[in-house]
Length: 126
Image (tube, rainbow, N blue to C red; front, top):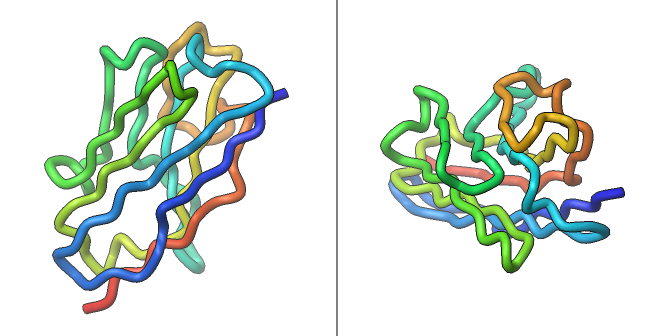
């Protein structure tokens, strides 16, 4: 079993920054790919960023590319999402997830992840 706990969300003005953290417990997630997803009210959950087990491979959605950066610290069993130049359309609940069956890869599709955190709210005011 893996437990994931997100933190770092909050209310920020447009143009501001936040850094989300996702701390894993129960077992190490260092062998596994990790992803960040978000879900706004009335919308489907969408991929934001993914990172491979080693951190050598990352991917970011076009909507956040150049503004958000995913990273991980396997020694701390933690994944991060640095969010800069935030926009009101970034407002959503942000979730981290891990895929223990993917051989260390990340995925763009939510249902390929088998453990999820409870989410952290990010609200960007205009």
